[in-house]
Amino acid sequence: MVSIIVAVAQNGTIGDKNSLLWHISEDMRFFKRTTSGHPVIMGRKTYDSLGRPLPNRTNVVISRTAEHIEGCTIARSLEEAIALFPDHEEIFIIGGAQIYALALEIADRIYITRVEHDYEGDTSFPSWDESKWQLLSRDSYPCGEKYPHPFAFEIYERK
Ligand SMILES: NC(=O)c1ccc[n+]([C@@H]2O[C@H](COP(=O)([O-])OP(=O)(O)OC[C@H]3O[C@@H](n4cnc5c(N)ncnc54)[C@H](OP(=O)(O)O)[C@@H]3O)[C@@H](O)[C@H]2O)c1
Image (tube, rainbow, N blue to C red; front, side, top):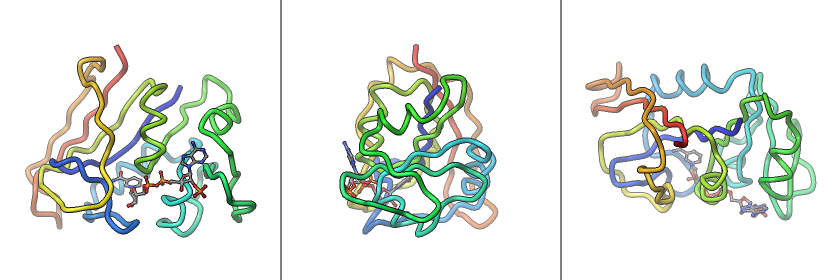
């Protein structure tokens, strides 16, 4: 099973200058809890923004150019990355925009954190046809312990 996991601002942005636009501890914990023990697949730029492999997860980096990244497997395409794992495994596509655009065609599930605030950024989540997806759950918060704006965790499955 292929799952996308992403945090998206109200105006669609997901990042700027190869970094995140907000810090929401609850979202960091949700991401860690959801993806730990599962493979994570990311674009080379997202890997650069993290700067290290994520612990307790098999890390796959998609790149046309990179030869070796310590602690990661390199794949030349999304298909090659997904083929590394058995079908029953839940594989998480963790960004960025270029890799989400490819993954939206084939993903079974989307875990989306809706950050209910506008942020200026140079990278946005690709447009997706929400009518083709069924909302399974929504867990909303008026603010975080240290974050002032509302946000919600939503899970969608392809209809
Ligand atoms: N809010 C969130 O949840 C979230 C999550 C993740 C990332 N982000 C943000 O997203 C931004 C990065 O996203 P991005 O779209 O610029 O980059 P990206 O998708 O992370 O990585 C792009 C790179 O992936 C490789 N690639 C892309 N398509 C490929 C293909 N078809 N075949 C082989 N390799 C391919 C290329 O690597 P090479 O150049 O090495 O060939 C390309 O430069 C950052 O700002 C980051 O902070 C946000």
